[in-house]
Image (cartoon, rainbow over all chains, first blue to last red; front, side, top):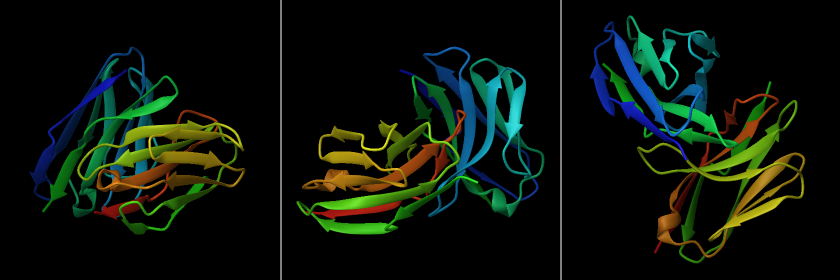
Length: 110
Length: 109
């Protein structure tokens, strides 16, 4: 099965600062990759997905962007964070009919 | 637009008190319905995938069933370690999952 690594696990950033969250996947090749955000008490909102290197689809208009520089690497970025960007960010990878999740990155914007 | 509604939002059970969680959905074409368990501060953990109405799957004290409009997750004789948030998701005609808000289950000893 797959293993998904996310870092950092926890991040506290001021409004207006940049952001970079990284995700790497082991145990598979050419996976479909996803970034989800989970706000407190709410479901998982799909932000971006990628079917291959350099191929990014955005699900909702927002202050964030995603990149996939390598087959098993997925990065979530922002140039200037907003308070509303706070949340729990989850990277996921599709494989064997199942969506595998990483342990998440908790972002607090102050 | 795909919609997934889970109820209740929260469920408090006594150890051994069986209950059911509901997931109702509207989707253009269902490839699969997924159940996940999520512990606080962790990523969701896969439990089941159901593909067609009438299908049932079991794992320990959990049993998932599927109809054309909803799915149920039955918890039989729960233990405190079953306390978690249970998420339901639908897979439409591509490789994206749309999630419900979840049901938070608390089992008291």
